[in-house]
Image (cartoon, rainbow, N blue to C red):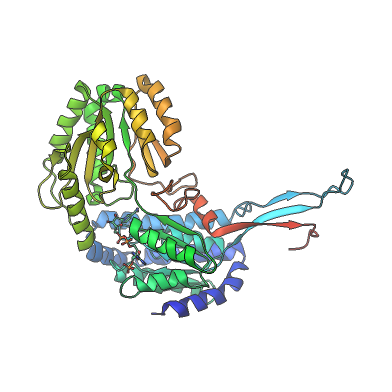
Length: 458
Ligand code: NAP
């Protein structure tokens, strides 16, 4: 295993040859990584299961997603418009001054540091989305392995390195570094050869790395995906028409993989009334038989327990429904006035914990939406009769969330070109970006314009 400085030195040496590789060669590299991950499915799935307690179907699905997003970026490189080239021909006769020929396109930033996530040991980790986007852009990658799944990380790194050799990529184009404590990751971000950072994890971790990046003699961009409570607005007609169906969708989304998704629906907003009572009764019935599932790490389980205890101890908050066992799903409820005056209730509890916030009138939904901080997602559960209320909420929500969902649930992020998995702070450290979908490549590129050049240069 390389140390941080050596990995950065090799990544910097690889940058020039790598950024000049033809798009088709980088696409072949990405496809070779995908094929090698698939060929290593059995050891990878076993390692994921042993290190994370995630179910086999989830591990296999995540592997397919990881290979799929590598191929998505390979396909992108086959489209000559991926680097956004623009051209305005010269106008030598323009008055009062001639206009020069202007062309622009995007170029890669340089070596990228990637911090993998605890909850997606494949798709958001060593050979995951950030790595795929950076490699597609022409940036070498140094991954700081997540301490919760070192064996999975090593197996995935072996696939990337073997694919690099197979497809003739420059030495140093990829490295995995690991080490005890926060220090190796901090040295990686501080290293002057690193040009950008991709991170998925806690707000504390993301902000610590952002501070280091900004304090460097040459500051660099940090794309940190951190915390989100993903509000869901249950509009009155929808609840009146389908309280049971909405409850079933909610509980399934809240409890999948022990709720350990950054898109978990942590907050529900609804208007008091008969339909909401039906929804509550259905949620109680669905949550009650649920048992605690093992969580990713002891630290995440401890944080879940602390978060649940903090909600339970807030005046004006009561428990609506709970499963059985220490880390079981739980849903709390409170009135909108209490929610607005109690900032700790706005924080993410990572796991299957939900909070139902009840309002007296439909207008309260719009008011409380205005008070919410940035989110990865916001969801409207609405019927045709809720159209005007939905139309009032939409302009508020589009300023606060990266993805807005209509009659669906926020968990389950499609890996497709139009996907946005981002949002204003604290969902991310840079609201202008996404970490999923083809637009994720833009984080590791910058535009350059070429003025007055002959057609055969550059
Ligand atoms: P984390 O503790 O932030 O760790 C993520 C990565 O950052 C790890 O590689 C970690 O490695 C490194 N790191 C953390 N703090 C650091 C610091 N101060 N300086 C340098 N490196 C640091 O996140 P996690 O372990 O994945 O999960 C913990 C919490 O994060 C969860 O309870 C949840 O709240 C949140 N989370 C959010 C998402 C999301 O998608 N938004 C996903 C997963 C988790 P080292 O500890 O080895 O330095």
